[in-house]
Amino acid sequence: MQVFAQISLKPFNSFGIDVCAQLFAEAYDDSDVHEAISYAVIHALPLFIIGGGSNLLLTQDIHALVLRMATQGIRVLQDDSVHVVIEAEAGEAWHPFVLWTLDHGLYGLENLSLIPGTVGAAPMQNIGAYGVEIKDVFAGLTALDCQTGELRDFSLQECQFAYRDSLLKHDIGRWLVLRVRFMLSRISNKKLDYGSLQQCLVKQGITEATPIDISRAICSIRRETLPDPVKLGNAGSFFKNPLVSEVLAAELKCQYPDLVTHQQPDGQIKLAAGWLIDKSGWKGFRDGDAGVYKMQALVLVNYGAATGRDIVSLAKRIQSDIAKRFKVHLEMEPTIIEP
Ligand SMILES: Cc1cc2nc3c(=O)[nH]c(=O)nc-3n(C[C@H](O)[C@H](O)[C@H](O)COP(=O)(O)OP(=O)(O)OC[C@H]3O[C@@H](n4cnc5c(N)ncnc54)[C@H](O)[C@@H]3O)c2cc1C
Image 1 (cartoon, protein in one colour):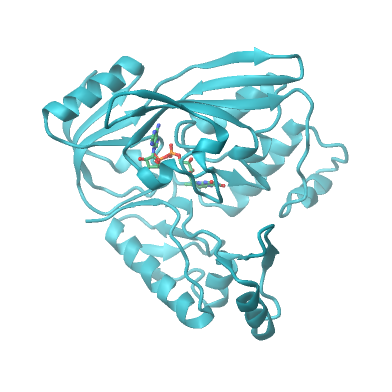
Image 2 (image 1 turned 30 degrees about the vertical axis):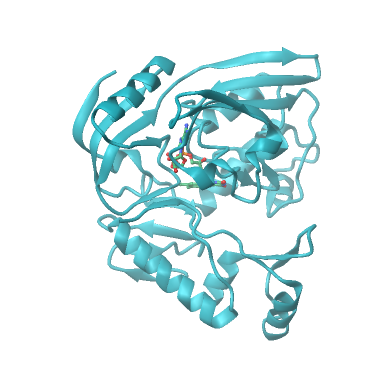
């Protein structure tokens, strides 16, 4: 394993923020991971794990050994001819992995097509899109406890998945995810009732959509509505959709009849953060090189030379404006590395 000093992380985060890693290495297998942990201990530095850097906001140089997970490998663990358990290494790129499953006639991940990042980071925030979250097909993961060096398998229950959340996200840096298992099916269980998916399929003249059709339709919607990080730095949705009480939702609905609400099984109401930000006039706002994407108010963007602090400062202005107008707290979604 090669270790580099003072490496710019600009190519390794989708916001394109230019900060330096004190030390930087890439892990191609488990022995690289163990070597990196020992190296960090010897140099008295913390280990900071990254995948594709698509859910990160870096606001300062990282005084750590930054380890990019680049481990590869996909294997079938169980196959009862309908249900198939697949295991993928943490460094596998997410979207190519989804395509691999579809190519092999295995269904369950199609709605999660074109999400950037890696397999290993997917459980961190229980990635979700178009009515599906990875918890719906999750069959376990193996992680290394960076504090003790022990391996541990996590079941679905142990991960405590919730909306863009998991046990692992609350203890960033402790658990290094090595590989993740998914329970997929040869029989498709289509989920089409989300956003403009059904409309998009109808527009394409597709009445009986296959999982591959669904994946393609989602890719085309995402390409139209989300900025490509290669052209415009961003980390996807910057804020989570807030959960509020029924009382507050009803109060807001009186004031704003077009308020977007989704009833939750536990009685809470989920509001669309993008709607709140848009309604407050932030869509398309730009301050220097930090801005709110003009097509989607939920996405903050770096027009080129914004620093992580510029983005955080814009995010905080939006948070306090939304709190004032709607009495709603917006929680930031990416991992923010703040001083
Ligand atoms: C254009 C765009 C669209 C997006 N759309 C969606 C979407 O629809 N749904 C959604 O849920 N997310 C979305 N995201 C966010 C992001 O793609 C996901 O959260 C993705 O899973 C992050 O993967 P990553 O490998 O880039 O993680 P990174 O950004 O590298 O890391 C994220 C966090 O996980 C930790 N981490 C990474 N790998 C490991 C590992 N192997 N072990 C332990 N910790 C690890 C890091 O320390 C960090 O705290 C989007 C992002 C972009 C840029």
